[in-house]
Image (cartoon, rainbow, N blue to C red; front, side, top):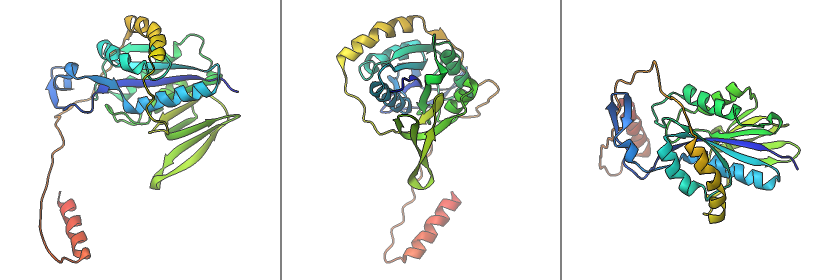
Length: 267
């Protein structure tokens, strides 16, 4: 069976159950009390990590790295739980995980970290990451990572992968359908959507094995400067909610549809 070297790119994001309030800071837009918010691995990157661990388990000799970008304290906080989910080797980058950073700068930092992995074999290389992001949502970061690494076989919106003599990849397309793409051999880049796997159960033994490398990796986390130079934000605010209620009886469906379209158009 083939062996793979799978590098997963991810970042930490605030716990989605928290109230997120954008504010203006001296360095640009930020979240109110951002450093106080509990953090977790970006859900999109989480799907990519679980799929990578599953693929590695089915192909003996394979290995998974997680290149994680975020403030060192937040990375440590999230790794305490994530370490029990899947076996991986951490490569930590100490930098901003703000949603107001530039996708190109983020991708450059991730690509440089991947290129610096000792003994990386491009003939076995698969780069995984989130198709989107709960923080940035740019939808371009992983594409740029692939371009920097010179990986032209890229697949976005991936929901499944089957590995054999070739890679059979399930990609989302318009109309709620999927297309089956075939990749002859690595290197390849996959931007994952939700995948097909549930979140793994906590495994203390996996956690203990991971922590032997996670703590040293956090201690030597490389500082990276991620920003959005040349970009000016005029304002940041929560989306406004609007609700107009109209109670009527016995209105024909065509007229209801017309009024809805007019209401949307006027907004």
